[in-house]
Image (cartoon, rainbow, N blue to C red; front, side, top):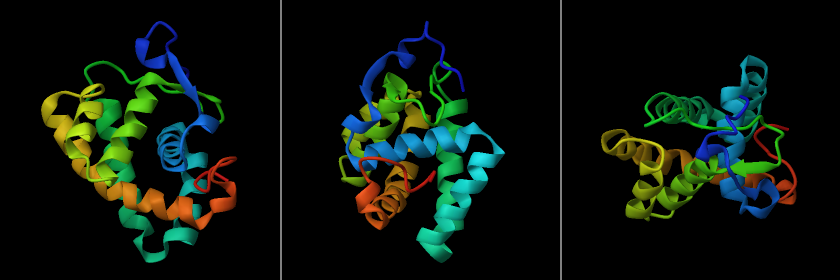
Length: 155
């Protein structure tokens, strides 16, 4: 996942430690799920430990949302490696979409999704993000001491 530095979507807009825990978890999930089988296996174990019987359904939501934003975009989504400190514009739009959808701010979530996707795909992404947001909130709440330092999803 090497970002295309020529892409506006890769332009740094924040660092992970500046973001609220939910947005940070969303970005770490996006990066980790896209990183490869070893990271994905670690995430599955952590989802299972924290979410129990709901883990598989949440993994399916993460998979669907990741596939949608990576494959249905107006242009290729720019993203960084899991441990990268900076947050790119596309990653931030993804995280803000998830947070807004979870907060019931569907119009705002849709606007963030439109930064990544066309209208039809953006609508689908918001619906998935709303459900996935609850799982991410559970992950963040399960590890409040680590919420600002590391990811309960990846560590």
